Structure formats: structure tokens, C-alpha cells
Image (cartoon, rainbow, N blue to C red; front, side, top):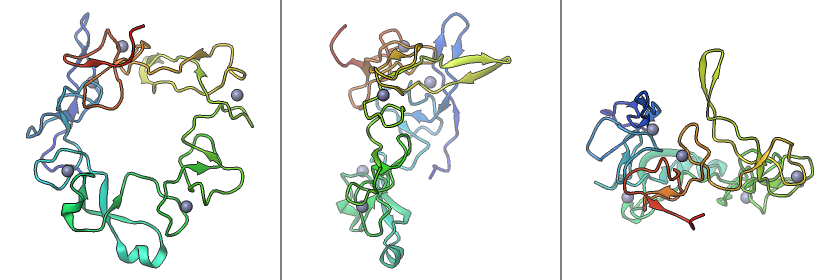
Length: 236
Ligand SMILES: [Zn+2]
Ligand SMILES: [Zn+2]
Ligand SMILES: [Zn+2]
Ligand SMILES: [Zn+2]
Ligand SMILES: [Zn+2]
């Protein structure tokens, strides 16, 4: 689903002024009409769009599509959804396509002909398999981050803080931002409370409070915020 003329490149954001170190993540973002990415998701400037994805079919609509055409014959035969992505549309422009479309981002219940979101599965850390109506005995709601301890259904809020960039055997290893795994009762000795958004800049564990006004989630802390980002939430 990539544009033919899109060239992948590396993020140009300088993350350390001491040695001009650049972010270097995959840079998919730039202004519409450019054909070269300049920044990654974390460092994209306001109004920059993801050039590495297909946008809504409507001319000049830069919204990432979440609806798509699907194989109606296959659906009628089997009850399972198979998307064909011939036309993709954002939610706003779906009526104008005059085609029947379904949400291609949502995970549907595996029960044939069921079009409800799948949010239940056996494993606390897997994606959903069945909807609430069709879930099997002993399945959990995977949208709730439960403590990993067996039979514990407290919300997980504690884990170890790991550096996002580590040097192991002279190789740079990048880690994912740690997510909470245990509740207060089952937390390990080294675990810390982490029920707050963490700055997504590498090597930073500051509280993320800044984003652009058209973004859903806060991304960066006070130190790493980018020009014209707004502050979200109360100040300390
Ligand atoms: Zn970057
Ligand atoms: Zn659109
Ligand atoms: Zn279902
Ligand atoms: Zn627990
Ligand atoms: Zn930060």
C-alpha cells in the first residue's frame, strides 16, 4: 500500500547537540506533495502526513483510511471478512464511495457473520479473538492490562524501567518503551510505578505532556517537545 514515488529515509531530528546525533528512525513523515520522508512519527511537525501509507481515496484527503471494500462473495459463502483494499476511505468520505465498506482496522470476532469487535482471548497479552457474546469460558478482556500473576485481575501499573537504547556486546540495542506488567500486590522488588505516559524520545523517562493539537496522544516531555506543540494535563 505504498506510494510508488515514496522514498524511505531516516529521521533528521537532532537528539543530542553534543555530537549532532540524529534520531535515525524510519522517516515516513513530511508535508503532503513531498516525496521524501523527513521525520519519524515521534518527531513529525504539525500537518506532516505519513507518506508511506495510502490515504483516503478522496482527492486531497490526507486522513489515513480505516474503511475498505471487501470480498462480498467470500463473506456470503464463509461469513469471514476478507478485505480487498481496492478502495480505501476515511470515515468522513465513506458515503461518497457508494460502495459497501467495513472497518479494516478493527479486529472482528472470529465467529462467522459476527461484526462485533473481538476483545476476548485466553491470554492476557494477546489480541482479541471473540466478542463478548461469543467468548469462551475463561477468556479475558484483552483491552484491560491485567497483572501477569496467574488468577490476578488487578490492573497492571508496575514494571522495571529499561533504557530505550542499550549497548550490548558493542551493538546498539533499541528497546520498546516498557509497559506495566504487575499490580501493587505482585510487583517485583525493582518495579516502579508507571501509570503515566512516558516521553517517547530515546533514553528519556520523563512524563510525556506535549503533542500537536490534532494528535490523540501525548508524545514528548518538556525537554524534548517540538515547536508549537501544546501541553496536555495539569502542571506537576
Ligand atoms: Zn525521529
Ligand atoms: Zn477522506
Ligand atoms: Zn461475536
Ligand atoms: Zn497482581
Ligand atoms: Zn523526554
